[in-house]
Amino acid sequence: LVSRKWKVNPTYIDLGDGIKIQEGGFQIMAGPCSIEGEDQIRKTLAHLKENGISIMRGGVYKPRSSPYSFRGMGIDGLKLWYELAKEAGIKIITEVMQVSQIEEMDPYVDIYQVGARNTQNFNLLDELGKNTDKPVMIKRGISGTIDELLYSAEYVFSAGNERLLLCERGIRTYEKATRNTMDLNAIAVLKEKTHLPVIADPSHGIGIRHHVAPIALASIMAGADGVIYETHEKPEEAYSDGQQTLNFPESNKLIHQMNKTFELR
Ligand code: PEP
Ligand code: MN
Image 1 (cartoon, rainbow, N blue to C red):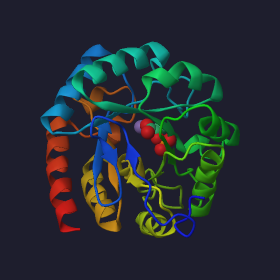
Image 2: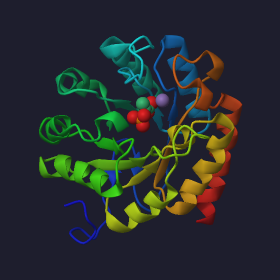
Image 3: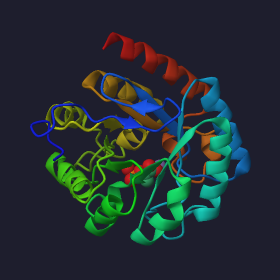
C-alpha cells in the first residue's frame, strides 16, 4: 500500500491553515529535543516565526537510554505547548511512546512521531492506524533496514491511517566517530519506492552540532521533502541532546542555506 507501484500520486499531508508537507515542496520542522517549560516554548516559537517556519518539534515523552535522564514533561507539558503553538499559528510534532498515551495526547497533537526505538512496536503502529486520523511520522529503526521501515508504515496504512511520513534519522553501524550514520542513500531509495513524504533528521543522523548543517543540505539534494532538526536558545543547557542542538543564530543560518539549497534542486 505504501509503494509507488500501488499508488502513483504522491501522498501529501495537509495540516490545515495552508501548511502542507508534499513532494515538490519543502517543510522545515525545528525545536528542542525536549520540551522544558513555558519560557523555552515561547522563545522557540518566536525564533520559528521570525524565520517563517510553521512546524515545531519537541518531546514530552522521551525515550532515554538511561532511566535517570530527564524523561519529559508529559501530558501537562504537551497541553501547555499545544496552546502556545496554536496561538502562534504553529503546528507541533511530538513522540508517542505507547498505546495508552494516544487517547490523552490526540487533541493536542498535529503530527505524531514514532521514535527509532518504537519503529517495530507493532501494537503501537496498529493503534495509530485505528485510533487516530492525525498524521504519523515513523522514524527508521536504530538498526532497521529500509524495507523494515516501509513495513512499519504498511502496518499503520493497512490499519486505516494513510497520513504517513517516513524519517531517516541515521542508523547504527560500526562507525563510532559519529553518533549514528546518516544514510543519505535511504532518502534517495525511499523517494523511489514509496509515495509517502520523506523527512531527514540530520541532528540524530550525525549527532554533532557543527556537522548538522552540511548533512541537512545534503539530505535536501538527496530528495528529502523536509528536514527536522534540534534547536534551543542555549544548547549547552538543554535537558537532552545538547551536543547535536543548534543555537538560534546557527539555526537562522541553516534555514537560509536550506531554502537556497532547495531552490537548486
Ligand atoms: C528525538 O526526536 O528526539 C528522538 C528521540 O529521536 P529518535 O527516535 O530518532 O532517536
Ligand atoms: Mn533528540
